[in-house]
View 1 (tube, protein in one colour):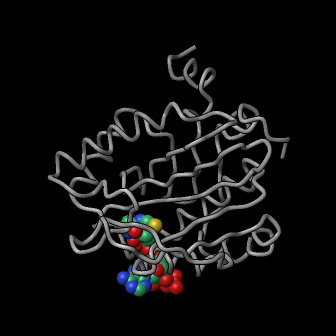
View 2: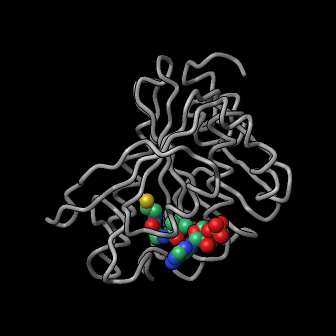
Length: 228
Ligand SMILES: CC(C)(COP(=O)(O)OP(=O)(O)OC[C@H]1O[C@@H](n2cnc3c(N)ncnc32)[C@H](O)[C@@H]1OP(=O)(O)O)[C@@H](O)C(=O)NCCC(=O)NCCS
């Protein structure tokens, strides 16, 4: 058995790969992590914007890169039925372009997942954001048997809200959130399993190629959800 097979047997999240055409979401190993940290260091948003509640993108390029390393190392350990934070690298034709995350608490009881993501500045505005979210929804609903998917973004984030609205989520209220010491309006959205079922054709058109998933059955078993 190779060392990566040994790792996946012990830690099934390490074997997760979801693909559609040139787009891939996969577990972030150390080589991919370093590339993603360097990508984030080259910029994730304009300096006068802040799309994140925790402003990890502030600072020098090295500080931003270190913050990606520290966050991802910490989150790797957070994969259990009580709480999982599945952070997946986003690659186009093998080139790392960003991160798509799925977070859940009390998974066997709730089966509710919240998504979050970022792309390097050079890769934004070309439709990758909407395709990677469709893949994340496919992983959650078809792969992991989720009941509901949630997401949200600050009101002044047209790209993230644009992805969410285009994919057919329903609005789920807005709240004020403290962002860099200032109150900022944050929109919440949800999609139930039934809504996702009705949207599948529309999502398939956005993806343009069929979805292939590796390692997801093992993760679903590890997380204690029912078989698909
Ligand atoms: C949010 C993000 C992942 C979206 O990915 P993307 O590849 O840039 O977005 P897409 O090209 O798929 O566009 C998605 C939709 O938003 C719209 N959109 C994108 N940028 C926009 C802008 N600046 N103004 C208005 N609409 C915009 C697009 O027209 C598209 O809508 P459509 O499908 O109805 O045409 C990406 O922009 C990003 O990483 N931004 C910085 C980090 C961030 O905001 N993360 C999310 C935190 S909640």
